[in-house]
Amino acid sequence: MPRKVLVVEDDPALSDAIREGLSDEGIAADVVSNVRDAIDAVKTRKPDAVVLDLMLGNESGMDVLKSVRAGRDQTPILILSALGTTEHRVKGLNEGADDYLVKPFEMRELHARLVAITRRSRKIEGNVLTFGPLRLELTTRRAFRDGKELKLSPTEISLLELFIRHENKILTRKMLYHQLWDTNWESETNVIEVHINRLRSKVDKGFDKPLIHTLRGRGYVLSETVPAHQDLVEHEEETETT
Image (cartoon, rainbow, N blue to C red; front, side):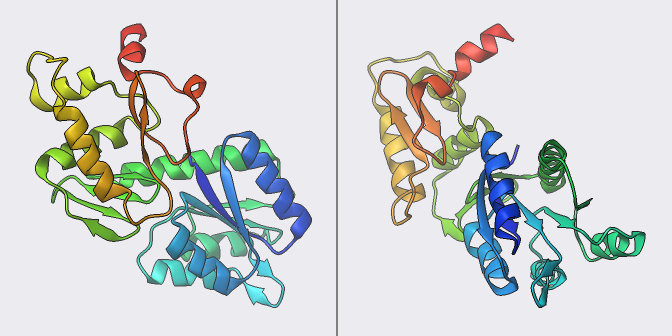
């Protein structure tokens, strides 16, 4: 499910309604109302998906779509427009939109379509793992945050892969140790803390928002927000009950 969506809409009442509706589903929405701000926001805010209106005052949302795709950015884009003819739909999809929803619409359908296009985008990437601003290329073993390459050791790459594969779930020290070294758990060792601290210094240092969090007595979690304990589950407990 997408966690962060960019809404490009010049009708304040509608954009507020979309933002509120997405918030009810646990999705944060940023709103912009013109072409230039939309293009900049896709580059800098790295949304999981874009909801794009085609009629933005005297501007066309199609210019946003064309610019994003011309830059080879494959961020999922859903066009949300009152222009509902077959010609308009075909043009939008041919220009690179992932889906097209005609106004008026139901919020639950918009949510379902956003979930679907973000799910498809992850499958298409295949050998790339992403989480928020993080991108991990499994084939080349290279990691990036906001497009900036992170100089990670092989162990740090493996740690980051585990975190992304289990995003927003608590990973205990024991689980991390077993996954990385496949040996008996040594509860007194601080090797996990050392590697976590090194990884955190490279992933979070110099950026506005920390992504790797320590939950005292429980483990570690990769999250874009400061996690509340009651909102999380331990990975090991979850696997035992499935």
